[in-house]
Length: 615
Ligand code: M6R
Image 1 (cartoon, rainbow, N blue to C red):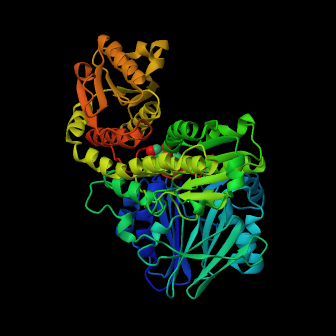
Image 2 (cartoon, protein in one colour; image 1 turned 90 degrees about the vertical axis):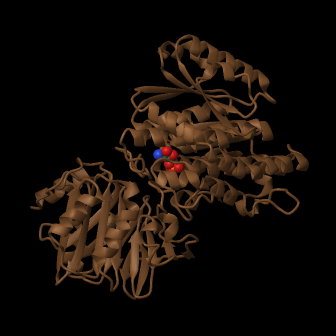
Image 3 (cartoon, protein in one colour; image 1 turned 60 degrees about the vertical axis):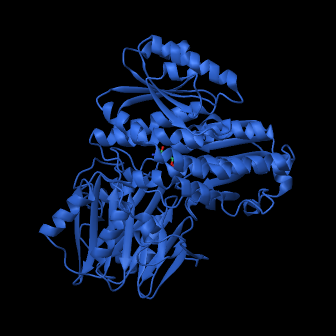
């Protein structure tokens, strides 16, 4: 939530910062603002609403040119999305500008102190106190970096801060606790941002800041210390994707592009993890075999779509390893005093690697002695950094707020972990593992085939754009798929959408069925677990008899569903546990198209942000 950019160099800071903000707008779009150091002073502009509003304001009233600047795109927490609450915030003399991501928990107390000392605070935000505190500390030491360290020591909560001071025109200072901040190192220039996407067109050399660190950026280099001024060890890494990966590339939305990228994302996530003999090579996990052999319980913690991936993974983990597996919403996890110990393996699944609920859950798990494995799509993010081990998904940058390709790759990564556990613990034979791996390797092509047949789904979605409610049903792994289909529709189309376990319908939700209500049913394969298949066919008949308009997602060759399907969406036949990888795709397309037909902006749905860095 909230995107931050800082720049010092020889280019126009305003151009660099605005381009960075465009790439970070997925993080929040309640307001945007910039500040530039120029002509011995500080000039800034900020506007409620999307970045386009700010750009329009800047076109009408340009800022003076300068080579040092900061910018912000906001997801509102303290104070509504107004011009006054937009970042940057300033001190009373207008010499300091600061942008912030996170929540300063003791801001009310600090605000009262500042007011007592005669400061006038102009916004309702928690951030503004930092600008005033920085000005006070700077007047004592005339060093913005030191002032930042002193201020950070007084703050509680989660914060990424980036500040400039008119008296230090060639310096940008950043600080990080719990929220992400990455440094970009260029030739004679340096960048700070919440995400490398903001500066990827300028440099692919990055430094991930650690917890409680302050960074000083100058044209000729960066220096990093802790909050007490002790130099910190930093690791520079090379970003392995380029600017084109963060562009729409001819698609109408990032979501459409990311849906289309799924075959590649799935294949890339398997890449290098299968040996020549077809067995799994996950040595990158670096969890000793003895630890994996001793695991007596797996707990998956995640939020939103990643939570749904965890729900599906539970079926595979328990089936392939016979280890009990719990899946818990990260936001609930630590508050119920979960039973964990040295033999628990906690898997934290997160695309961004910075979801605060998931981060707090993993910290709690580690405090209880559990081994924590992160499944993450963002290199060097906080969640993998704080975990004992990490398995990266290789989906590439996911920009659209609605998670699509990350979900499929999270599933693949979970399956790999499950199989690896089975391999290490000997609960699966080598040839069984190789057979699943072969099926997984074929899935990328199957997802591609699904994508080629989506026109009728798009047409159907458009025809339903006037509906108020859509229900989703599934059984077994199809149940979390139904939940995911409903989540996509809620967040994108702003419609009432709910997912149910089909067998649960008769215990209450069937009362919701009324004439012409669209109900999407994810049908398990008729092969293998055919009992499940037969039962869901009965469920389809039950709802149809009560007037539902049935939209049936069923495997090619499943003829039993045909008489009861008002609309039939075919997916390729896959092994039961892998079916979510193909069954989810039509639901993503359905939600995207329906939302577009309703005039919604699919990449930036209302009230949401891509990375949720507050609890
Ligand atoms: O970055 P994460 O995977 O931790 O994010 C978790 C959820 O916030 C995320 O999946 C969210 O539910 C998506 N917007 C759903 O499309």
